[in-house]
Length: 314
Image (cartoon, rainbow, N blue to C red; front, top):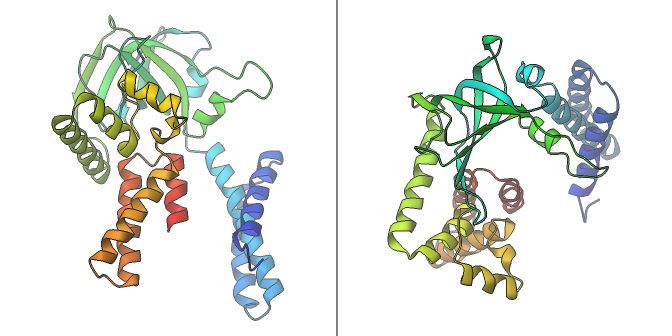
């Protein structure tokens, strides 16, 4: 326990996830369990075994709450009206994530964004709607941005379920992000931006900084180097120079191009070295590095590998 203090905590958290996924636990009971574990821990602070039990119970309760929060999120009626097969639709909503440009030499240019639906128009006419929709735009006419209120025409459908046992469940993965529909926008479909600036101010500031860095990298480096830096530093999927890509493949280092915990570790090491050379004391170095890594995590879109590595760095 003393040599690996986080192992029992992680096991308790995972156990809470598994139990919540297997049994219909009421959220009130889980919250009562979490509150009771805190009270027990405070009462038995001088009894190590009882305190350990309270800590493990707390983390198991948090695991169960995490699962319940994913599966019982606020009203999302898109899942009840989206068809299984692709059908025409017009969606009115707000872009709630920074759109991403996907590059594939074998496919046309695409932009992917997530819409928080407000209304949809089907064969039955306009109706209010809530929930996330993942839209893919081919040959986008203009670059969408976080916070844009838009009306999109296209074809939508339900997220496909896994076709074989053990296959990755994309539908469940997107459902945990409150996304329940896919929207395909072809070049002949209409896209109208009604207004901008509908999102959170601090998210807009982060994405604006991110786009500014993209512009600086593109302006000051060659095309091949700019693509590598945007992929390595900002976690973007961009078109890499074919010779450079082949060099990474031949040397078995292609994983370095994909943003991961390695990037966070590298930045943490550089920060520690630079702050030490500046003569900062240990405590100030730790606080400065923690804040800088948190900013980098937000800048890269809080991708799971970066978030995990940031927590470990903290």
